[in-house]
Image (cartoon, rainbow, N blue to C red; front, side, top):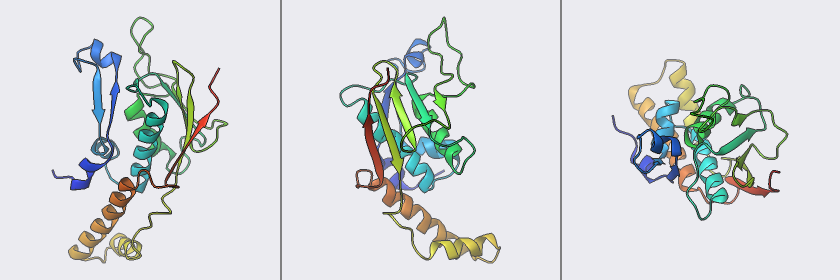
Length: 205
């Protein structure tokens, strides 16, 4: 197995997970995530997965500017329903990093480390997603737009040819290269204005 080299160059994030420390999964409770983890979860790499990754990284940077993010202590609310468009794919990536789940996560130990009911949908929130620190109530809204990093005009015709069964092996390889080249450019543009919008919100009460 060999991932494209640029996966390892994408922004990474380290979180402190007290449950991981408690149960010995990590001796100091620190867990580092990279884009390749999101790809393993989704099973593919695309602009949506890259956008989910960057929104999560940028939100955590904003919420924890001087401290390590606390996995399992972050509430996440999506504006859309879980089944609308690509919301479910994005939510899976967000949940991987933050530990937030709906009702399917870890139930906790002695009333602590409960990961359920931290992930919400169809919320009356600005942007695409709102991340909230449960300890301080600090909140940020984030949105993603890949319009500023367009794909190759050759990519979609090649995809249609592949899906119709008429593409050669060389054409399939060309498409894969063009597809991942756009993902690479998106990840490299993490701080480009308009790609990921991060807006502080009034603190939750």
